[in-house]
Image (cartoon, rainbow, N blue to C red):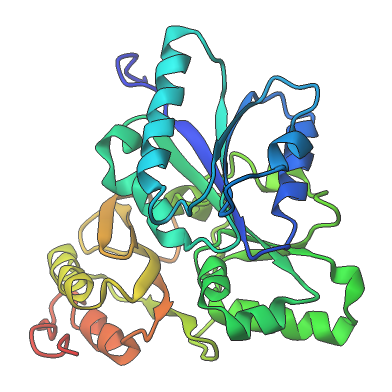
Length: 341
């Protein structure tokens, strides 16, 4: 039974995507949807003034908070923490009622520091849960944007769901090529079309996309059998291990990796088959922040194996593979020297 003294965490959805991708159109669609949720919106624009508030809110009760003349991920991050605190206080006092928070970032935002806020700030993580990062991609201009802009690549790398807009403006071959490129950057995010913001709300709200244990229960094969790929500066690969692993060795190895390569690791998640443990172990991290916990029990007859996905820039792939291989139970760890850059 749940402890009534422990507050239920408020889910938060981050909508990101490069300039002109259709973020505000998607947000407007969500606010108009028949989902029964009361939504508070935190909107960030790099310009000193924004017209999106007027575009979004006409005859509704949504709470829209603007953070202008800056980027959530840098100078305005303190404002994000403050605003989340103010929203929580108003909710607790009965001045404001909401069930969900949506953050729409500027098209120039780096997503990592925004996501880190929900891990690194105790005043935030005690009351809010990062539900998912939605990245909207302009199919017509994405190839050039991904080539020219680091921010566009990183927005894809952090995504839990990738939503392709303006697909009617490209050919089938162009769309297929874009899908391949997006999958090479982020092999774990689902990719689906969105037309003028129309997407099934069940696919984007309350999906627990940032919670690996939850999504593995819903989609056991979401990591798939995809191997490593290369292409853009942001890349991803999946590590597989069928033998049971030693949790102590894994934690020590990943601690060393995070210390050396944390700035290059954008997202990393995994389920671990731990020797002598009836439950799967779950870990996930953002940059240099990492956490782990015991997840759901292995089902009777279920094939037990470890699967880990790493997304980032300049990933030390061979070092990760060798080091994790050395974490198999009963083997000698090989992370002390091999983790050096």
